Length: 198
Image 1 (cartoon, rainbow, N blue to C red):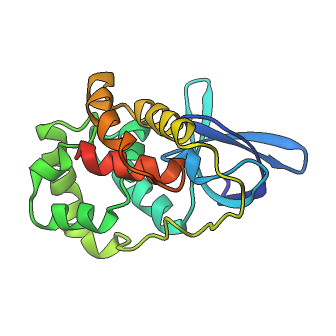
Image 2 (cartoon, helix red, strand yellow):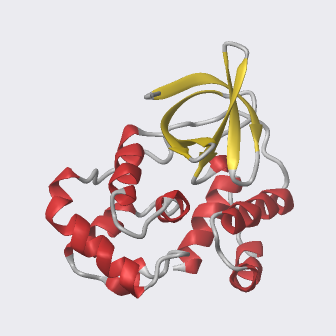
């Protein structure tokens, strides 16, 4: 089992990145692939999940994110896709507060999380709050790379949100609001989009 991979990011797609480690390209599904940049050397904490005939790597920028992902997977009814959708929100402290405060409404704003699943998250994790990481370092990687024009950043952000499971009609609804914002990069648009979708 892998703990982390360190290598060159060779591709950034809407739902995954490819990291070259010693000449081997690892496809790693991440909550926000656009937080990475091509040709960036990155350390990606990974969780390997083996099901049937498939091995999948899920990647995270911090060990705290990986820990939170593992805790979410332990909840009945939560799969990797739902856990990633929850992690895509940068408000991890808000997530923990929602668990502590029995805030089902907050949890049902994530794609794939209905009322029953939200209640199950609270039930399974409420007594484990002390084990949950409270802070993440979403802006850990500061990059000095040329920024693409806002239109392509917004398009990439919308693709990433769709890959996380948000409906096209919801994305159309927030697209106009995001077009009025002059944000720095795709990751900023993803973060702003997640806030509008909640």
